[in-house]
Length: 158
Image 1 (cartoon, one colour):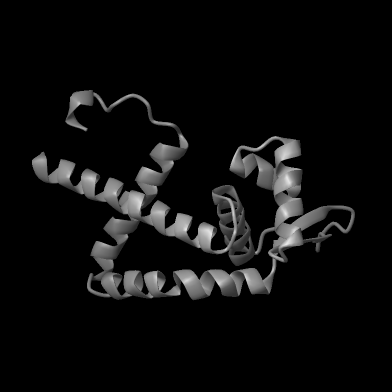
Image 2 (cartoon, helix red, strand yellow):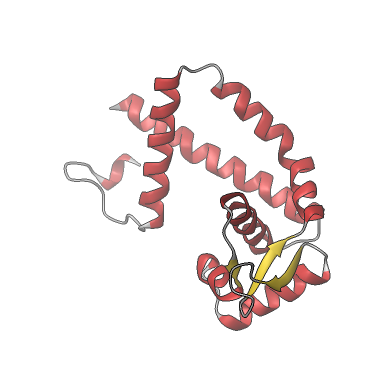
């Protein structure tokens, strides 16, 4: 059990360090942390071949309509996003991340991504699958707002 708690504490420490790293990126580029989260959501959508409307992006970020508009206006003025007509439905206005914003992120986060890939190469396929399953499970638990501990555990363990 202690080893399991050490793993959870290491994950928490990694999340904190990733947040600090993201914060440095935001600060160096005159951005708010929510701006960075928006760019990540837009890059994820781009990678998946999906289109995000302003409303959908706002929902993903937990912003109301006014907050989403202010965010997009700020990012558009900075040249990080653009509003465009949807590919499949030209009536729809979608938000796209610009190539320059992708390159900005790649320049800053690239070394961390490469180091992470290098670490993963040290594991076999089965181990990498277990790592993915674990991280996806933690992501899902966080997304669900897991406020209650699993049966048989104590809140004091954390």
